[in-house]
Length: 178
Image (cartoon, rainbow, N blue to C red; front, side, top):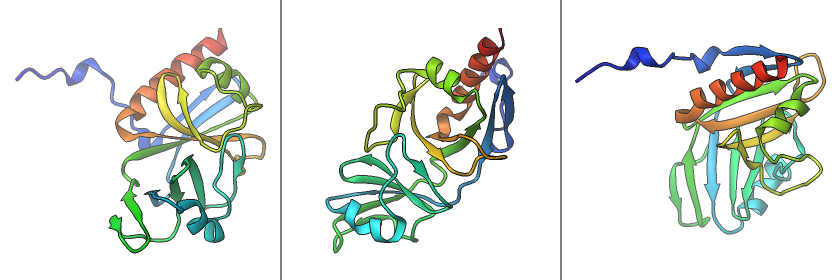
């Protein structure tokens, strides 16, 4: 079989740091990510993690829940749960820690990036953080932990699409610099 691996650059998304005009992208290790689906999932985890984060509400701290749909959450550093179907609670649980790559985007240029990334408007709230960003499905939300203060976004993207996201953001950063 022919080896075409040299045709595409390998980007180390685990230790990424990329800068553009007024904006920086870096990889984040957020810890455990657990996808939980089922009727009543919102009520079950609100007491421990607070109300699920929607768009454009900011997440706070290291443990929080992201709203993905009426009956679906992504728990970031939430309680340890066993994978599979929990018949007693009526919940499906999937460990997604290796399934999502997580990136931080911070700086005063975030608005310019959002304007180029798609139809993402902080003035149009939603209970879900799921968005189409540069043609990729991501979980996009603000987070209070910006280096040096200011605005910070977090993006969870399928690990298999992490390089595509980074390459697309490199192109946006170049365009912002022109």
